[in-house]
Image (tube, rainbow, N blue to C red; front, side):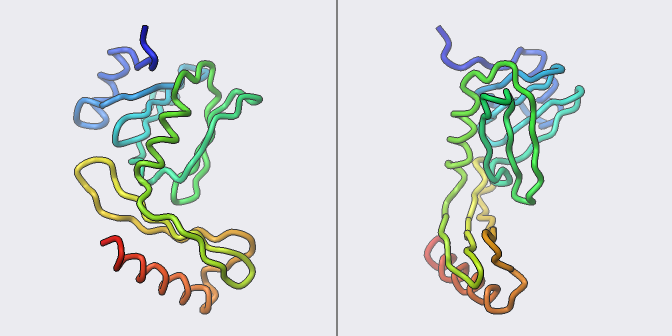
Length: 164
């Protein structure tokens, strides 16, 4: 008995053309209107209307399964939000969470005027292991505020000394 359902060979062949190599699929979720979400070892791949879109895991900010709505939602590090109606989730939500966590190297929160800022470093799960640093404000924190910006830069520089 297979614990994780993987995409059909024809779907993997289409995805291989987009990636330029054979995909290392770990799990999938089957969406409405033939949409397909595939969690690969190094990237999240989504097919909608016959077109594949691919995000390296270090560019996926988070997401999750909403069982009441029957949909999977995620956001990317550029704050774009995505959602796919999912008919069969399989083990996709668990693998999605594991891949996002696996690409996260540093996560810390600093208090600033009017809120907090998350400082996050993410690393690709493939050959490119470059750290990508992100500052995500919450509450009413303003990254353009000079005092906030100075605090974020100082903490990021301190963390870079530890994790580089």
